[in-house]
Image (tube, one colour):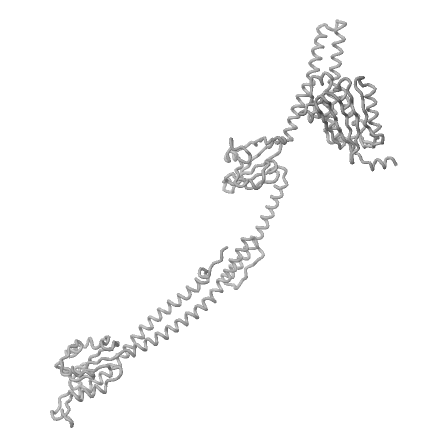
Amino acid sequence: MKKVSFFRSIHFKFVMVYVLLIMLAMQIIGIYFVKELETSLKENFNASLSKRASLLVYNIAEEMSPRDPKENEDDDGNTASNEITSIIKDFETDEILEVRVIDSNKTVIATSSIDQDIVGKKTTEAMVLRTLVGLEDSNNNYFIHQETGDRVMVMTQPIKENNFSDKTVGAVYIVASMEEVFSQMQIINRIFATGTGLSLCITAALGIFLARTITRPMSDMRKQAIELAKGNYSRKVKVYGEDEIGQLAVTFNYLTEKLEEAQAMTEGERKKLASVIAHMTDGVIATNRNGKVILINNPALEMLNVSRGTLKDVHITDLLGIEDGNTFESLIDEQDSLVLDFSTNEGPLIIRVSFSAIQKESGKIDGLIAVLYDITEQEKIEQERREFVANVSHELRTPLTTMRSYLEALADGAWKDNEIAPQFLNVTQTETERMIRLVNDLLQLSKLDRTEYKLNKDFINFTDFFNKIIDRFEMTKLEHVSFVRNIPKDALYVDMDTDKITQVLDNIISNALKYSPEGGKVTFSIDVLPAEIQIRVQDEGVGIPKGSVNKIFDRFYRVDKARTRKLGGTGLGLAIAKEMILAHGGDIWAQSQEGKGTTVYFTLPYNPEQEDEWDE
C-alpha cells in the first residue's frame, strides 16, 4: 500500500484544523479588542482635549469680557488680543497643532500658528460657524492634516460672555494631533500580533502532540491492517489508553484473533479439499460463472493430455472439445453424463463426464464442477463381454445346428441306412465332444478369473519336466515335423503348478504342430535370465499377420477361423495359457513373421539361491 504523504495525512489535517480554529478565535478577539481599544483611546483623548479646551475657553472668555477702556491697555500699550495670543501660546503643546480664537463677527482675533496672516480675517470653517450660531452637534471631527499628513482631531467650543451667559461672543478652534494615540495602537497591535504568533506556535506544537495521541494508534492500526492483508496474524495493535481509540485497538486485536481462527479453519478445509481433489483417481475441473477453468487436478490433466500453464482463460467446452453441440448453460442443465472419446494412436481413452452446478445461498449459479471418469477399461471389458457372449453363442450354435440337422435326418429315417447312420452318429459325437471341450475351457477360464483361485505349486526340475513334455509329443507327432532342443543339461528348479504349466505347453506345442508345414521344424529353447527362465517354442509355419500378433492371446480370437475350426480349436487355448502364466507371476508373448513362422515366449520366476537350498 502506498505511504500517505505528511501533507495528506490526518495528522497534518488535525493540526491544521486546530491551528486554524485558534487563529480564527485570536482574530475575532483581536478585531474586537483593537476596535474597543481604539474607541476607548479616542474617547479618552477627546475627553482630555475637551477638559483642556474648556479651561482655555474660560481664560479667553475672561479676557474677552467688557472692561473699562482704560483697562484694555497695559503698561506696554497692548490690547486684549495680545493677552489672548499669550494664553493660547501657553495652551499649545506637542499634541496641539493650532489654536484659533474667533469673535462673534467671525473674525480671527488670535492664532497659535506661525502664519499670522489669518488674524483679522473672516473664517470660513463650517464647524466654527455652527458653533457661533449655537449648534453643538458637531463639536469635533477627525481629519488628515494637509501639511503634515497627520491624523488630527478638530474641536470647536463656544466662548460665552462672562462664562456664564448664554450669549456667544466667540469660538475656539483647536486642531490636535492624534498620532500619539495611533502610535500606541500600533504598539499594542504589534504586541498582540507577536502574542498571536507565539500562541499559534505553542498551539501548533500542542496540536502536533495531541494529534499524535490520536494518529499514532490509527497509524498502528493501519500497519496492522496491512499485515492482516499479508496473512500475518501474530502482530498486535498497542493499546494506548482506555478511551474510544483504546477500545477500538482492543476490538481490532479481537478481530485479528477471530480472523486468524477463521483463516486457520478455512485453510484447513482448503487443504483437506485440495488433498482430496489431488488424490482422487477421477479428474475434477471447476469453472467460474463464465465457464472459464479455475481449478483442475492432476488426473484431469493426464486424461486430457494438457498442461496447467495452457489453461488460462480456457472455456470448459473448448477444453473438453464439445463446443460445437454444447454451451455453458446447457451443461448446467445437463442431467446425464457425457461419454467422450479421447482415443489416439497411442491407445484408447474413453471418459465419462458428469456435471454439477455450484450455487450460492441466493440460488445464483457461481460455476460448474465437472468430474471425469476413465471408463476405458470398463468399455474394454464391456466390449470383451459382448464379444465373448457373441463368440460363445456362435461356437455353441454351430455344433448344435450341425447336430440338429443330423439328428433330424436320422429321425426322418436315415437311421435305417446302414452306411449313412454311422456317419451321422459319428459327426454328432464329434460335435458333442467339441462342445464339451468348449464348456470345459470356459469353466477353466472362469476359475482362473476368480481371485480366490489358488495354484498347487511345488519345486520342479523344469529341465526334466520340459524334456518329458517334448518326449510325449515326439512319440505322437507327425512324421513330416522334426524337433530341435536347445535345453540346458543343468537342473533348473522352478516353483510352479505342474498341471497348469503342462496345459500351457500342450496348448503352445499343439498350435506349433498344427500350423507347421511338411518338412517343418519346431525348436524348443530355455534361456536362464537373472530372475526368471524364458521358454521359447518356435515353428516354421505360415506365421501370423503383424496386426494380429498381440491378439492371439485374446479369448476366441482366431487368425484363420475356418482352418482353426476345421482343426477342432475353440480359440481359448492361448487365452487359458496366458491366464495360467500370469497366475505364476510370469509373462507370455509371441513374435511372428508371415511365411516364416511364429515363436511363442513365456517366462517363469526363477531364483538360483532357492535352487541351492533345494539341492542341500
